[in-house]
Amino acid sequence: MSEQVRVRFAPSPTGHLHIGGARTALFNYLYARRQAGVLVLRLEDTDAERSTEDSVRMILDDMKWLGLDWDEGPEVGGPYAPYRQSERLDFYRSQQEQLLETGHAYYCFCSPELLETKRKQAQERGDAQPKYDGTCRNIPLAEARARAADGEPHTLRLKITESGSTVIHDRIRGTVVFENKIMDDFILVRTNGLPTYNFAAVADDAAMKITHIIRGDDHLSNTPRQVCLYQALGKPLPVFAHIPMIMGPDRSRLSKRHGATSVNAYAGEGYLPEAMINYLALLGWAFDDKTTLFTRQSLIDKFSLKKVSKNAAIFDPAKLLWMNGVYIRDLCPEEYVKRALPELIKAGLLPEPLDEATWAWAEKAVLSVKDKIKRLAELPQNMAFYFGEEIELDEAARAKLEQAKEYPELFKTLHDKMAVLKSFSTQELEALMKDLITEADIKFGVLVHPLRAAITGRASSPGIFEVLELLGQERTIKRLAAGLKSVGIEV
RNA sequence: GUCCCCAUCGUCUAGAGGCCUAGGACAUCGCGCUUUCAAUGCGACGACACGGGUUCGAAUCCCGUUGGGGACGCCA
Image: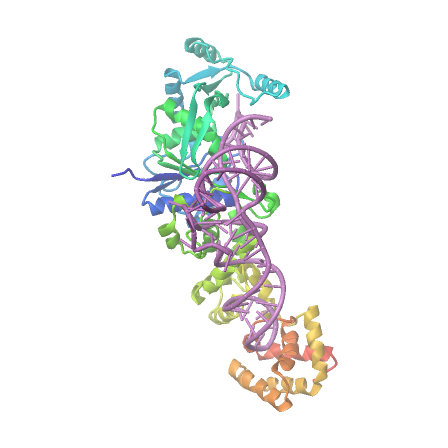
């Protein structure tokens, strides 16, 4: 029987969770759930300069918004706690000590300035690949320790075997071979005593018994170094799976200049987490040649690394938008209302505690535009005409209203009859209007278009009877009268 | 520059030698339905980067070219 699958998502807290990170997290999540394994969330905050507590909060919130719950990590703890690298410094110290003792690591006293100079020189000479020249490689450990103890600034480097090659068996890429001579003795511990990414990540992955490393393609070239570290540490290698990157429309790495790239931004714009999950799942993965809509559970049931594609994918906001519309329309009325009303409250269109009558009205109003919107944030804009007393007509509406001039008597009658209607309901209104057009022998549109323009200020709206009823008799009459008056029809 | 990865419609992808006159989805365009818009239905447009092999047969395998991306930090 094989060991339990343990995967991890290890973001560095330097801002919101972005699209790429979210997709990596999602694939890890899906794989963990599919394999009945464990998803570990680990914060890689060894860069004290850029890591912030705010970012930690934001990333955790973004993960929760997406519904990507982790089994071990911040807030939930776990057998390998702590899950923040900044709190694991003692552990790294013990690891580096071991590497020093086994001769896999050594002290390096070269200053950053010196290295920078050497790197520049190498570049100017046109050297194949700038790499550390090994100046401090053979300083006896005892001597190095003494110098370090004297307070001489130093880093720790991993001693890489220069000959041979390092082979990676990637679940997605296949076999990838790197010649060892292209690697240099990279830094494990910085002058400030903090571990570098490559060191901390590997030490932790090994310690936390991570079995599968599912991460972005951009880490593929880091992998041979990390493999060397695993070996130096005497730890078994995990399975690597490098998933393709997500690019912007210009095929360069997705970044701010491509527009919204953080999950949070999409949440704010009224995207549903389930739509985001579905869309992200399809970026670099497909189940078959037909299916595009997946529930979270079907994603879990169907996900496999085998079907992850190798090529980079371009993030397409248009498809996400379409999918979000699908998900909004698919929401049951209760669920839809529950998510929609806060948007109106946020926009100041509805008061904060809602009384029962307003709630009932708002429910219907919000439902009337359900299949017109693709993002919840479009709601206030789309429903503006339901609020306030007077309205302003846009250009298209003006033109439609002008058409009323052809039938001044008809609209006068419409106004008068509506004004005295006993029950201002969909049924009554429909009967009234049907009678009018039959009598006048005109098409329905002739009556509806100017009416809609007058009461909504726009050329398009939900079904006219629905709007009429929701608006109520008083406001309808008021707006209709004002509209007719503006085109010279006195009522 | 060096190393590594990748290469099917504008975009996401299906395709693991014959099922491919290459399938689906988004976008775009057209038509239908309809009180408008939306939704929806139908349809159109649209791709195997190029060149060599291998094979009876290649989008699928091999090599090269070109193109794109990534890495080359005391960032992650």
